[in-house]
Image 1 (cartoon, rainbow, N blue to C red):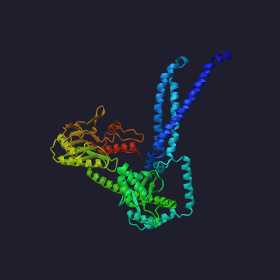
Image 2 (cartoon, rainbow, N blue to C red):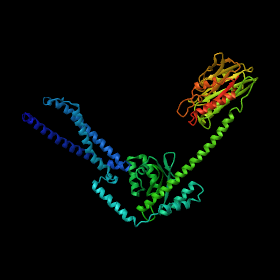
Image 3 (tube, rainbow, N blue to C red):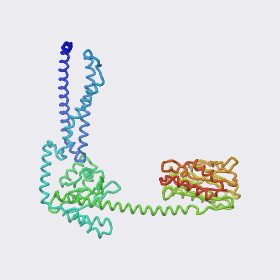
Image 4 (cartoon, one colour):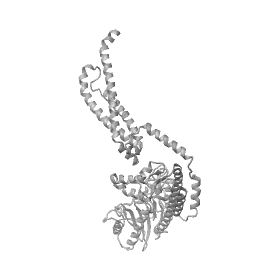
Length: 579
Protein backbone atom coordinates (compact mmCIF):
# COMPACT_ATOMS: atom_id res chain seq x y z
CA UNK A 1 0.00 0.00 0.00
CA UNK A 2 2.91 2.38 0.83
CA UNK A 3 4.52 1.71 -2.57
CA UNK A 4 1.17 2.21 -4.31
CA UNK A 5 0.64 5.59 -2.61
CA UNK A 6 4.25 6.66 -3.36
CA UNK A 7 3.85 5.74 -7.03
CA UNK A 8 0.59 7.66 -7.29
CA UNK A 9 2.25 10.81 -5.86
CA UNK A 10 5.53 10.47 -7.82
CA UNK A 11 4.51 12.62 -10.84
CA UNK A 12 3.23 15.45 -8.64
CA UNK A 13 6.29 15.21 -6.38
CA UNK A 14 8.59 15.40 -9.43
CA UNK A 15 6.71 18.43 -10.71
CA UNK A 16 7.07 20.15 -7.35
CA UNK A 17 10.82 19.38 -7.21
CA UNK A 18 11.26 20.91 -10.67
CA UNK A 19 9.15 23.90 -9.62
CA UNK A 20 11.25 24.33 -6.45
CA UNK A 21 14.46 24.16 -8.50
CA UNK A 22 13.17 26.86 -10.86
CA UNK A 23 12.15 28.96 -7.84
CA UNK A 24 15.68 28.64 -6.40
CA UNK A 25 17.21 29.65 -9.75
CA UNK A 26 14.80 32.61 -9.90
CA UNK A 27 15.83 33.65 -6.38
CA UNK A 28 19.53 33.45 -7.29
CA UNK A 29 18.94 35.49 -10.44
CA UNK A 30 17.01 38.05 -8.41
CA UNK A 31 19.87 38.32 -5.93
CA UNK A 32 22.43 38.70 -8.73
CA UNK A 33 20.24 41.32 -10.37
CA UNK A 34 19.81 43.29 -7.15
CA UNK A 35 23.55 43.15 -6.51
CA UNK A 36 24.29 44.37 -10.04
CA UNK A 37 21.79 47.22 -9.83
CA UNK A 38 22.96 48.34 -6.39
CA UNK A 39 26.64 48.10 -7.40
CA UNK A 40 25.99 50.21 -10.49
CA UNK A 41 23.97 52.67 -8.41
CA UNK A 42 26.81 52.99 -5.88
CA UNK A 43 29.45 53.38 -8.59
CA UNK A 44 27.47 56.29 -10.07
CA UNK A 45 27.54 58.00 -6.64
CA UNK A 46 31.28 57.52 -6.01
CA UNK A 47 32.10 61.23 -6.34
CA UNK A 48 29.18 62.14 -4.09
CA UNK A 49 30.31 59.62 -1.45
CA UNK A 50 33.83 61.05 -1.58
CA UNK A 51 32.56 64.58 -1.01
CA UNK A 52 30.39 63.40 1.90
CA UNK A 53 33.36 61.65 3.54
CA UNK A 54 35.58 64.68 2.94
CA UNK A 55 33.00 66.80 4.78
CA UNK A 56 33.09 64.51 7.79
CA UNK A 57 30.64 61.68 7.02
CA UNK A 58 31.53 58.47 8.85
CA UNK A 59 31.73 55.03 7.17
CA UNK A 60 28.64 53.95 9.09
CA UNK A 61 26.74 56.93 7.59
CA UNK A 62 27.73 55.85 4.05
CA UNK A 63 26.85 52.23 4.87
CA UNK A 64 23.45 53.26 6.22
CA UNK A 65 22.67 55.49 3.21
CA UNK A 66 23.52 52.79 0.64
CA UNK A 67 21.63 50.10 2.56
CA UNK A 68 18.63 52.40 2.83
CA UNK A 69 18.55 53.11 -0.90
CA UNK A 70 19.13 49.47 -1.83
CA UNK A 71 16.40 48.32 0.55
CA UNK A 72 14.02 50.89 -0.92
CA UNK A 73 14.60 49.60 -4.46
CA UNK A 74 14.34 45.98 -3.31
CA UNK A 75 11.19 46.75 -1.34
CA UNK A 76 9.51 48.23 -4.41
CA UNK A 77 10.38 45.11 -6.40
CA UNK A 78 9.10 42.80 -3.65
CA UNK A 79 5.84 44.77 -3.47
CA UNK A 80 5.31 44.46 -7.25
CA UNK A 81 6.17 40.75 -7.08
CA UNK A 82 3.68 40.15 -4.26
CA UNK A 83 0.90 41.81 -6.25
CA UNK A 84 1.69 39.62 -9.27
CA UNK A 85 1.89 36.49 -7.11
CA UNK A 86 -1.50 37.19 -5.56
CA UNK A 87 -3.01 37.33 -9.05
CA UNK A 88 -1.21 34.25 -10.42
CA UNK A 89 -1.70 31.91 -7.44
CA UNK A 90 -5.43 31.88 -8.14
CA UNK A 91 -4.59 29.80 -11.25
CA UNK A 92 -3.04 27.19 -8.92
CA UNK A 93 -6.07 26.88 -6.65
CA UNK A 94 -6.92 23.40 -8.03
CA UNK A 95 -3.43 22.13 -7.13
CA UNK A 96 -3.55 23.30 -3.50
CA UNK A 97 -4.85 21.25 -0.60
CA UNK A 98 -5.23 22.56 2.95
CA UNK A 99 -3.97 26.03 2.09
CA UNK A 100 -5.56 29.05 0.39
CA UNK A 101 -4.07 30.65 -2.76
CA UNK A 102 -3.34 33.85 -0.74
CA UNK A 103 -1.94 32.28 2.43
CA UNK A 104 -0.54 35.18 4.51
CA UNK A 105 2.25 33.13 6.13
CA UNK A 106 3.55 31.97 2.75
CA UNK A 107 3.54 35.46 1.27
CA UNK A 108 5.13 37.00 4.40
CA UNK A 109 7.88 34.35 4.42
CA UNK A 110 8.65 34.89 0.74
CA UNK A 111 8.72 38.67 1.17
CA UNK A 112 10.97 38.42 4.25
CA UNK A 113 13.34 36.06 2.41
CA UNK A 114 13.64 38.41 -0.56
CA UNK A 115 14.11 41.51 1.58
CA UNK A 116 16.75 39.72 3.63
CA UNK A 117 18.71 38.76 0.51
CA UNK A 118 18.27 42.32 -0.75
CA UNK A 119 19.95 43.62 2.40
CA UNK A 120 22.73 41.07 1.96
CA UNK A 121 23.16 42.03 -1.69
CA UNK A 122 23.28 45.70 -0.72
CA UNK A 123 25.79 45.23 2.10
CA UNK A 124 28.84 44.32 -0.02
CA UNK A 125 28.80 47.39 -2.31
CA UNK A 126 27.85 49.53 0.68
CA UNK A 127 30.85 48.26 2.64
CA UNK A 128 33.12 48.78 -0.34
CA UNK A 129 31.90 52.37 -0.68
CA UNK A 130 32.47 53.01 3.02
CA UNK A 131 36.10 51.79 2.76
CA UNK A 132 37.00 54.15 -0.08
CA UNK A 133 39.46 56.91 0.64
CA UNK A 134 37.84 60.38 0.23
CA UNK A 135 40.55 61.49 -2.22
CA UNK A 136 40.17 58.29 -4.23
CA UNK A 137 36.40 58.63 -4.25
CA UNK A 138 36.48 62.31 -5.24
CA UNK A 139 38.96 61.52 -8.02
CA UNK A 140 36.76 58.56 -9.11
CA UNK A 141 39.76 56.24 -9.01
CA UNK A 142 38.33 52.74 -8.82
CA UNK A 143 40.39 51.01 -6.18
CA UNK A 144 39.61 47.53 -4.91
CA UNK A 145 39.60 46.76 -1.19
CA UNK A 146 42.72 44.63 -1.66
CA UNK A 147 44.55 47.52 -3.33
CA UNK A 148 43.42 49.90 -0.58
CA UNK A 149 44.63 47.49 2.13
CA UNK A 150 47.95 46.98 0.37
CA UNK A 151 48.49 50.76 0.12
CA UNK A 152 47.67 51.22 3.83
CA UNK A 153 50.17 48.48 4.80
CA UNK A 154 52.87 50.09 2.68
CA UNK A 155 52.17 53.51 4.23
CA UNK A 156 52.35 52.12 7.79
CA UNK A 157 55.60 50.30 7.02
CA UNK A 158 57.14 53.48 5.59
CA UNK A 159 56.13 55.43 8.70
CA UNK A 160 57.56 52.74 10.98
CA UNK A 161 60.80 52.69 9.00
CA UNK A 162 61.16 56.47 9.09
CA UNK A 163 60.17 56.92 12.74
CA UNK A 164 63.51 55.62 13.96
CA UNK A 165 65.36 58.27 11.97
CA UNK A 166 63.21 61.23 13.06
CA UNK A 167 63.49 63.01 16.36
CA UNK A 168 60.42 63.99 18.35
CA UNK A 169 60.14 66.19 21.40
CA UNK A 170 58.98 63.97 24.29
CA UNK A 171 55.86 64.94 26.23
CA UNK A 172 57.85 65.33 29.44
CA UNK A 173 60.22 67.77 27.80
CA UNK A 174 57.32 69.81 26.43
CA UNK A 175 55.67 69.99 29.86
CA UNK A 176 58.97 71.06 31.44
CA UNK A 177 59.53 73.73 28.79
CA UNK A 178 55.95 75.05 29.11
CA UNK A 179 56.08 75.05 32.90
CA UNK A 180 59.34 76.97 32.94
CA UNK A 181 58.04 79.47 30.38
CA UNK A 182 54.65 80.26 31.93
CA UNK A 183 55.74 80.24 35.59
CA UNK A 184 56.56 83.93 35.46
CA UNK A 185 53.42 84.90 33.52
CA UNK A 186 51.14 87.35 35.30
CA UNK A 187 47.88 86.22 33.62
CA UNK A 188 46.47 83.32 31.66
CA UNK A 189 46.57 85.11 28.25
CA UNK A 190 50.22 85.96 28.87
CA UNK A 191 50.91 82.33 29.84
CA UNK A 192 49.30 81.10 26.62
CA UNK A 193 51.36 83.56 24.59
CA UNK A 194 54.58 82.33 26.20
CA UNK A 195 53.57 78.70 25.62
CA UNK A 196 52.85 79.40 21.94
CA UNK A 197 56.29 80.98 21.51
CA UNK A 198 57.87 77.93 23.17
CA UNK A 199 55.95 75.58 20.89
CA UNK A 200 57.01 77.51 17.79
CA UNK A 201 60.65 77.29 18.84
CA UNK A 202 60.44 73.57 19.66
CA UNK A 203 58.71 72.66 16.40
CA UNK A 204 60.52 75.13 14.16
CA UNK A 205 57.19 76.46 12.89
CA UNK A 206 57.03 79.76 11.03
CA UNK A 207 53.87 80.79 12.91
CA UNK A 208 51.51 79.57 15.63
CA UNK A 209 47.92 80.56 16.30
CA UNK A 210 45.50 79.38 18.99
CA UNK A 211 41.74 79.49 18.40
CA UNK A 212 39.73 79.19 21.62
CA UNK A 213 36.07 78.26 21.77
CA UNK A 214 33.78 81.13 22.78
CA UNK A 215 30.19 81.23 23.97
CA UNK A 216 29.14 82.41 20.52
CA UNK A 217 29.71 78.92 19.01
CA UNK A 218 32.90 79.82 17.22
CA UNK A 219 36.64 79.42 17.66
CA UNK A 220 38.38 82.77 17.76
CA UNK A 221 41.72 84.48 18.14
CA UNK A 222 42.66 88.10 17.63
CA UNK A 223 43.08 87.73 13.86
CA UNK A 224 41.03 84.69 12.88
CA UNK A 225 37.75 82.94 13.67
CA UNK A 226 36.08 79.78 12.38
CA UNK A 227 32.52 78.56 13.12
CA UNK A 228 32.04 75.64 15.48
CA UNK A 229 29.86 73.89 12.89
CA UNK A 230 32.06 74.82 9.93
CA UNK A 231 34.24 72.83 7.56
CA UNK A 232 37.43 72.65 9.65
CA UNK A 233 35.76 71.65 12.93
CA UNK A 234 33.61 69.05 11.17
CA UNK A 235 36.80 67.44 9.86
CA UNK A 236 38.55 67.61 13.22
CA UNK A 237 35.56 66.14 15.10
CA UNK A 238 36.05 62.81 13.28
CA UNK A 239 39.83 62.92 12.83
CA UNK A 240 41.81 62.10 15.99
CA UNK A 241 45.21 63.31 14.71
CA UNK A 242 46.68 66.63 13.55
CA UNK A 243 45.16 67.52 10.17
CA UNK A 244 47.81 68.54 7.65
CA UNK A 245 46.98 70.43 4.44
CA UNK A 246 48.90 72.16 1.68
CA UNK A 247 48.45 75.43 -0.15
CA UNK A 248 46.88 73.57 -3.07
CA UNK A 249 44.42 71.92 -0.65
CA UNK A 250 43.32 75.37 0.52
CA UNK A 251 42.86 76.51 -3.08
CA UNK A 252 40.70 73.45 -3.82
CA UNK A 253 38.63 74.10 -0.67
CA UNK A 254 38.06 77.71 -1.68
CA UNK A 255 36.89 76.69 -5.18
CA UNK A 256 34.65 74.00 -3.69
CA UNK A 257 33.14 76.52 -1.26
CA UNK A 258 32.44 79.04 -4.02
CA UNK A 259 30.67 76.38 -6.09
CA UNK A 260 28.84 74.29 -3.50
CA UNK A 261 29.01 75.99 -0.06
CA UNK A 262 28.97 79.79 -0.30
CA UNK A 263 28.51 80.00 3.49
CA UNK A 264 31.99 78.46 3.94
CA UNK A 265 33.83 81.00 1.75
CA UNK A 266 34.64 83.33 4.65
CA UNK A 267 36.02 80.43 6.70
CA UNK A 268 38.21 79.21 3.82
CA UNK A 269 39.57 82.66 3.17
CA UNK A 270 40.26 83.14 6.87
CA UNK A 271 42.22 79.86 6.99
CA UNK A 272 44.16 80.84 3.87
CA UNK A 273 45.09 84.16 5.47
CA UNK A 274 46.65 82.46 8.49
CA UNK A 275 49.24 80.65 6.35
CA UNK A 276 48.62 77.49 8.41
CA UNK A 277 49.71 74.07 7.17
CA UNK A 278 48.42 71.91 10.01
CA UNK A 279 45.47 72.06 12.42
CA UNK A 280 45.73 70.36 15.82
CA UNK A 281 42.51 69.84 17.85
CA UNK A 282 42.72 70.44 21.60
CA UNK A 283 40.39 67.87 23.16
CA UNK A 284 38.98 67.46 26.65
CA UNK A 285 37.08 64.17 26.61
CA UNK A 286 34.77 64.50 23.57
CA UNK A 287 34.87 68.29 23.37
CA UNK A 288 37.25 70.37 21.26
CA UNK A 289 38.13 73.38 23.42
CA UNK A 290 40.52 74.93 20.92
CA UNK A 291 42.49 74.52 17.70
CA UNK A 292 46.22 75.07 17.16
CA UNK A 293 47.12 76.36 13.69
CA UNK A 294 50.81 76.12 12.76
CA UNK A 295 52.53 77.46 9.69
CA UNK A 296 54.99 75.33 7.70
CA UNK A 297 58.26 74.30 9.39
CA UNK A 298 61.39 76.23 8.44
CA UNK A 299 62.78 75.05 5.11
CA UNK A 300 60.04 72.47 4.49
CA UNK A 301 56.42 72.37 3.39
CA UNK A 302 55.07 69.66 5.74
CA UNK A 303 55.61 68.06 9.12
CA UNK A 304 56.97 64.56 9.66
CA UNK A 305 55.07 61.81 11.46
CA UNK A 306 57.29 62.26 14.53
CA UNK A 307 56.60 66.01 14.60
CA UNK A 308 52.87 65.34 14.34
CA UNK A 309 53.19 63.03 17.33
CA UNK A 310 54.92 65.84 19.22
CA UNK A 311 52.11 68.23 18.27
CA UNK A 312 49.58 65.74 19.64
CA UNK A 313 51.50 65.75 22.94
CA UNK A 314 51.58 69.55 22.95
CA UNK A 315 47.82 69.60 22.26
CA UNK A 316 47.20 67.68 25.47
CA UNK A 317 49.14 70.28 27.44
CA UNK A 318 47.38 73.23 25.81
CA UNK A 319 43.95 71.60 26.33
CA UNK A 320 44.78 71.08 30.00
CA UNK A 321 45.85 74.74 30.36
CA UNK A 322 42.61 75.97 28.77
CA UNK A 323 40.47 73.67 30.91
CA UNK A 324 42.27 74.74 34.09
CA UNK A 325 41.72 78.36 33.12
CA UNK A 326 38.01 77.72 32.59
CA UNK A 327 37.71 75.97 35.95
CA UNK A 328 39.53 78.83 37.66
CA UNK A 329 37.28 81.43 36.02
CA UNK A 330 34.23 79.40 36.97
CA UNK A 331 35.40 79.15 40.59
CA UNK A 332 35.98 82.91 40.70
CA UNK A 333 32.53 83.55 39.23
CA UNK A 334 30.97 81.22 41.78
CA UNK A 335 32.83 82.96 44.60
CA UNK A 336 31.68 86.38 43.35
CA UNK A 337 28.13 85.08 43.02
CA UNK A 338 28.23 83.73 46.57
CA UNK A 339 29.41 87.11 47.85
CA UNK A 340 26.64 88.87 45.95
CA UNK A 341 24.06 86.41 47.29
CA UNK A 342 25.31 86.88 50.84
CA UNK A 343 25.04 90.65 50.42
CA UNK A 344 21.53 90.27 48.92
CA UNK A 345 20.51 88.03 51.84
CA UNK A 346 21.78 90.63 54.30
CA UNK A 347 19.87 93.41 52.49
CA UNK A 348 16.71 91.31 52.41
CA UNK A 349 17.04 90.47 56.08
CA UNK A 350 17.15 94.19 56.86
CA UNK A 351 13.88 94.68 54.94
CA UNK A 352 12.08 92.45 57.47
CA UNK A 353 11.05 93.97 60.80
CA UNK A 354 13.66 93.37 63.54
CA UNK A 355 10.99 92.80 66.16
CA UNK A 356 7.17 93.01 66.21
CA UNK A 357 5.41 96.01 67.76
CA UNK A 358 3.04 95.64 70.72
CA UNK A 359 -0.19 97.39 71.64
CA UNK A 360 -0.91 95.52 74.86
CA UNK A 361 -3.85 93.65 73.30
CA UNK A 362 -1.97 91.11 71.15
CA UNK A 363 1.48 89.51 70.92
CA UNK A 364 3.14 88.85 67.55
CA UNK A 365 5.88 86.48 66.34
CA UNK A 366 7.26 85.45 62.94
CA UNK A 367 9.59 82.92 61.38
CA UNK A 368 11.10 82.83 57.85
CA UNK A 369 13.28 80.17 56.15
CA UNK A 370 14.21 80.82 52.48
CA UNK A 371 14.67 77.82 50.19
CA UNK A 372 17.76 79.51 48.75
CA UNK A 373 20.07 82.21 50.05
CA UNK A 374 17.39 84.78 49.25
CA UNK A 375 13.67 84.15 48.86
CA UNK A 376 10.37 85.55 47.67
CA UNK A 377 8.40 85.28 50.93
CA UNK A 378 7.67 88.51 52.80
CA UNK A 379 6.17 89.43 56.14
CA UNK A 380 5.94 92.78 57.87
CA UNK A 381 4.58 94.51 60.97
CA UNK A 382 3.52 98.17 60.63
CA UNK A 383 3.02 100.52 63.56
CA UNK A 384 0.13 102.67 62.28
CA UNK A 385 -0.17 104.81 65.41
CA UNK A 386 -3.04 105.03 67.87
CA UNK A 387 -2.46 101.44 68.98
CA UNK A 388 -3.17 100.09 65.47
CA UNK A 389 -0.87 97.44 64.01
CA UNK A 390 -0.66 96.23 60.40
CA UNK A 391 0.26 92.60 59.68
CA UNK A 392 1.33 91.60 56.13
CA UNK A 393 2.31 88.24 54.61
CA UNK A 394 3.11 87.81 50.90
CA UNK A 395 4.46 85.08 48.63
CA UNK A 396 6.04 86.15 45.33
CA UNK A 397 6.01 83.72 42.40
CA UNK A 398 9.37 82.11 41.72
CA UNK A 399 12.49 81.80 43.85
CA UNK A 400 15.96 83.28 44.17
CA UNK A 401 17.13 86.74 43.14
CA UNK A 402 14.18 87.52 40.83
CA UNK A 403 11.63 86.72 43.54
CA UNK A 404 13.64 88.69 46.12
CA UNK A 405 13.64 91.79 43.90
CA UNK A 406 9.87 91.54 43.41
CA UNK A 407 9.48 91.04 47.16
CA UNK A 408 11.23 94.36 47.72
CA UNK A 409 8.70 95.98 45.35
CA UNK A 410 5.85 94.58 47.48
CA UNK A 411 7.50 95.84 50.66
CA UNK A 412 8.13 99.33 49.29
CA UNK A 413 4.64 99.72 47.84
CA UNK A 414 3.01 98.58 51.10
CA UNK A 415 5.06 101.01 53.17
CA UNK A 416 4.24 103.92 50.84
CA UNK A 417 0.49 103.19 50.50
CA UNK A 418 -0.06 102.38 54.19
CA UNK A 419 1.42 105.76 55.12
CA UNK A 420 -2.08 107.05 54.42
CA UNK A 421 -3.54 105.64 57.64
CA UNK A 422 -7.15 106.19 56.64
CA UNK A 423 -7.00 104.30 53.32
CA UNK A 424 -9.51 101.39 53.23
CA UNK A 425 -7.96 97.96 52.92
CA UNK A 426 -9.75 97.31 49.62
CA UNK A 427 -8.19 100.46 48.08
CA UNK A 428 -4.80 99.56 49.56
CA UNK A 429 -4.90 96.18 47.76
CA UNK A 430 -6.09 97.80 44.50
CA UNK A 431 -3.25 100.35 44.55
CA UNK A 432 -0.67 97.66 45.30
CA UNK A 433 -2.05 95.54 42.45
CA UNK A 434 -1.65 98.41 39.95
CA UNK A 435 1.84 99.19 41.24
CA UNK A 436 2.96 95.55 41.00
CA UNK A 437 1.36 95.07 37.57
CA UNK A 438 3.42 97.96 36.17
CA UNK A 439 6.62 96.84 37.92
CA UNK A 440 6.69 93.15 36.92
CA UNK A 441 6.34 90.89 33.90
CA UNK A 442 3.19 89.16 32.75
CA UNK A 443 4.16 85.88 34.44
CA UNK A 444 4.96 87.42 37.82
CA UNK A 445 2.50 87.89 40.67
CA UNK A 446 2.27 87.85 44.45
CA UNK A 447 -0.26 86.42 46.86
CA UNK A 448 -0.89 88.86 49.71
CA UNK A 449 -2.64 88.88 53.10
CA UNK A 450 -2.97 92.08 55.10
CA UNK A 451 -4.73 92.68 58.41
CA UNK A 452 -5.08 95.61 60.82
CA UNK A 453 -5.65 95.33 64.56
CA UNK A 454 -7.70 98.26 65.80
CA UNK A 455 -6.50 100.30 68.77
CA UNK A 456 -8.70 98.56 71.33
CA UNK A 457 -7.43 95.17 70.17
CA UNK A 458 -10.95 93.80 69.81
CA UNK A 459 -11.48 94.11 66.05
CA UNK A 460 -9.48 92.79 63.10
CA UNK A 461 -9.94 94.07 59.54
CA UNK A 462 -8.30 91.99 56.81
CA UNK A 463 -8.07 91.36 53.06
CA UNK A 464 -6.73 88.29 51.23
CA UNK A 465 -5.37 88.59 47.66
CA UNK A 466 -5.09 84.97 46.56
CA UNK A 467 -3.02 83.93 49.58
CA UNK A 468 -3.32 80.72 51.58
CA UNK A 469 -6.20 81.53 53.98
CA UNK A 470 -4.77 82.15 57.47
CA UNK A 471 -6.27 80.17 60.34
CA UNK A 472 -8.27 81.66 63.22
CA UNK A 473 -8.11 79.18 66.12
CA UNK A 474 -10.74 79.96 68.77
CA UNK A 475 -11.65 78.02 71.92
CA UNK A 476 -15.32 77.04 72.16
CA UNK A 477 -17.36 74.80 74.44
CA UNK A 478 -16.84 71.89 72.03
CA UNK A 479 -13.09 72.43 71.66
CA UNK A 480 -10.72 74.40 69.46
CA UNK A 481 -12.55 75.68 66.35
CA UNK A 482 -10.47 76.67 63.28
CA UNK A 483 -11.80 79.16 60.71
CA UNK A 484 -10.14 80.24 57.43
CA UNK A 485 -9.80 83.95 56.58
CA UNK A 486 -10.21 83.98 52.81
CA UNK A 487 -12.15 87.14 51.88
CA UNK A 488 -10.51 89.36 49.24
CA UNK A 489 -9.77 88.60 45.59
CA UNK A 490 -7.13 87.25 43.13
CA UNK A 491 -3.34 87.65 43.52
CA UNK A 492 -1.61 90.98 42.94
CA UNK A 493 -0.04 91.82 39.59
CA UNK A 494 -2.05 89.56 37.28
CA UNK A 495 -4.46 92.18 35.91
CA UNK A 496 -4.27 95.97 35.73
CA UNK A 497 -7.61 96.65 37.45
CA UNK A 498 -9.12 94.41 40.14
CA UNK A 499 -11.60 95.15 42.91
CA UNK A 500 -11.05 93.61 46.34
CA UNK A 501 -13.38 93.09 49.29
CA UNK A 502 -12.26 93.51 52.88
CA UNK A 503 -13.75 91.77 55.91
CA UNK A 504 -13.60 92.18 59.67
CA UNK A 505 -14.22 90.09 62.77
CA UNK A 506 -14.53 90.52 66.50
CA UNK A 507 -11.56 89.22 68.46
CA UNK A 508 -11.85 87.40 71.78
CA UNK A 509 -9.25 86.82 74.46
CA UNK A 510 -7.23 83.70 73.61
CA UNK A 511 -7.86 83.92 69.84
CA UNK A 512 -4.94 82.68 67.77
CA UNK A 513 -4.34 83.77 64.15
CA UNK A 514 -1.65 82.03 62.08
CA UNK A 515 -0.75 83.32 58.58
CA UNK A 516 1.65 81.23 56.48
CA UNK A 517 2.95 80.75 52.94
CA UNK A 518 2.42 77.62 50.86
CA UNK A 519 5.93 76.42 51.76
CA UNK A 520 4.56 75.26 55.13
CA UNK A 521 1.89 72.75 54.05
CA UNK A 522 3.93 71.77 50.95
CA UNK A 523 7.14 71.01 52.88
CA UNK A 524 8.37 67.56 51.79
CA UNK A 525 10.07 64.89 53.87
CA UNK A 526 12.60 62.34 52.62
CA UNK A 527 9.81 60.11 51.24
CA UNK A 528 8.27 62.96 49.23
CA UNK A 529 5.25 63.32 51.56
CA UNK A 530 3.85 66.82 52.21
CA UNK A 531 3.50 68.28 55.71
CA UNK A 532 -0.10 69.16 54.87
CA UNK A 533 -2.66 71.54 56.33
CA UNK A 534 -4.15 68.95 58.70
CA UNK A 535 -0.87 68.58 60.61
CA UNK A 536 -0.72 72.36 60.93
CA UNK A 537 -4.27 72.46 62.27
CA UNK A 538 -3.48 69.71 64.80
CA UNK A 539 -0.55 71.79 66.04
CA UNK A 540 -2.87 74.77 66.54
CA UNK A 541 -5.45 72.66 68.37
CA UNK A 542 -2.76 71.64 70.84
CA UNK A 543 -1.40 75.15 71.37
CA UNK A 544 -3.95 76.41 73.87
CA UNK A 545 -2.43 78.56 76.62
CA UNK A 546 0.87 79.14 74.77
CA UNK A 547 2.16 82.55 73.67
CA UNK A 548 2.85 83.70 70.11
CA UNK A 549 6.64 83.17 70.36
CA UNK A 550 6.24 79.66 71.70
CA UNK A 551 3.67 78.71 69.05
CA UNK A 552 5.86 80.10 66.25
CA UNK A 553 8.89 78.21 67.53
CA UNK A 554 6.86 75.01 67.86
CA UNK A 555 5.51 75.18 64.29
CA UNK A 556 8.93 76.00 62.80
CA UNK A 557 10.54 73.17 64.76
CA UNK A 558 7.91 70.67 63.59
CA UNK A 559 8.34 71.77 59.94
CA UNK A 560 12.14 71.56 60.17
CA UNK A 561 11.97 68.10 61.72
CA UNK A 562 9.53 67.01 59.01
CA UNK A 563 11.84 68.13 56.18
CA UNK A 564 14.97 66.69 57.81
CA UNK A 565 17.74 66.39 55.22
CA UNK A 566 15.32 66.56 52.26
CA UNK A 567 15.81 69.35 49.73
CA UNK A 568 13.69 72.41 50.44
CA UNK A 569 11.67 73.45 47.36
CA UNK A 570 9.88 76.54 48.64
CA UNK A 571 10.31 79.36 51.15
CA UNK A 572 8.71 78.85 54.57
CA UNK A 573 7.18 81.83 56.41
CA UNK A 574 4.90 81.88 59.48
CA UNK A 575 3.30 84.84 61.31
CA UNK A 576 1.50 84.23 64.63
CA UNK A 577 -0.80 86.63 66.51
CA UNK A 578 -2.19 85.77 69.95
CA UNK A 579 -4.94 87.99 71.47
